[in-house]
Image 1 (tube, helix red, strand yellow):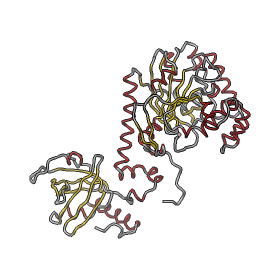
Image 2 (cartoon, one colour):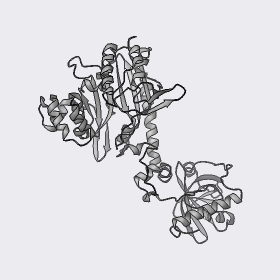
Image 3 (tube, helix red, strand yellow):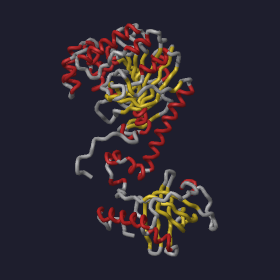
Image 4 (cartoon, one colour):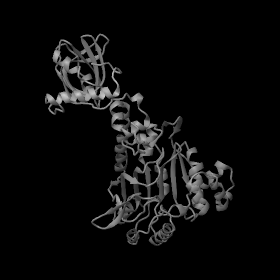
Length: 484
């Protein structure tokens, strides 16, 4: 067996291929008859005795060390890792061992013993190659973060801690379902393809249904269908699924967001705010200690601009003044703000660009402009504001919640405004949804609903700097041509 580093990558890959060819000639490539006795973790829990039972174990080869007439290796499975030992006296097993490469998936049979250094080890008596690794099994230290995300399967194979992270994410999904189920919510599935663009303000993905001869949109949000279910007689529903937005990617957002959206009849947004507090405790996120004990901080969106910049209350209600401030911001949104200086849009833009990332401790931001909340009920106290809040933790939005607009005539008027904006070139504006208005005209009870960004929540709980680190197979920019 060649020592690591003695072959060039090209030579090592050719050697791997030759060894697979040899297995094929022997009729031993990719066998499917190996029966495993137990996982490596279960093997570690078994008592060790000189006349102990024979065990058959399987895993991926992660390390090989030769020492004269003996060789050591390590194998890993989903549960753990175990050392292997083979002696030259076991001629067949020793010869087989010499044809192995890092990354091979193997099955081994033997008995457990403890080395003089106290390491639990399997003395290999027989072995079989279950799947040959034909690629360069690069150590994790040599892989960049981007490469690990592009080839997540390789990173998962090499990093048990990464597998544990995604197992924790799965437990978060289970806990989310348990949370809603315990409170009487019914989990539902609503369409992923929408005939009308809507549910939230965003640019959609568009596709064509050939048999029906019409365009459809990957859903931006399930909200309008959840509210249809309230018309149908349900009172508490939620959906845990992906929504799609055809826009840029960042450390905080992906164009396929996993969200938990829920809605409850006969409730208002203040009920949601009372129920949104985390279990008391502390989190570490991006070098910040976050105190999740209730009560959370609370601030109105206009007031947040006053505090952040020292502007007066009158200035944050002056579209001309805010347009000048927005003009100094970089990016296309700032340019758009100069040509369409709508007060609510300017307030939200400046909040997003200058305030959001300062909200490290859990904070409810309230009093969003009604013009930027087309599906939310207007505040009785101030009709220019929506009965809406967003929850920010760690400098990012975690949840968006509001009292639902259930007046069909008011909703129709808002849809007409949105449609006019779409006709004027706003690709993110909603379209007029006639069927949804028809549903509201049957009568939808007062309600409140919210959307929780599960990917962002996972980032927070698992202390991950980018959303791509909590998505198993995140979309990545293509590698440059010719780059390995």
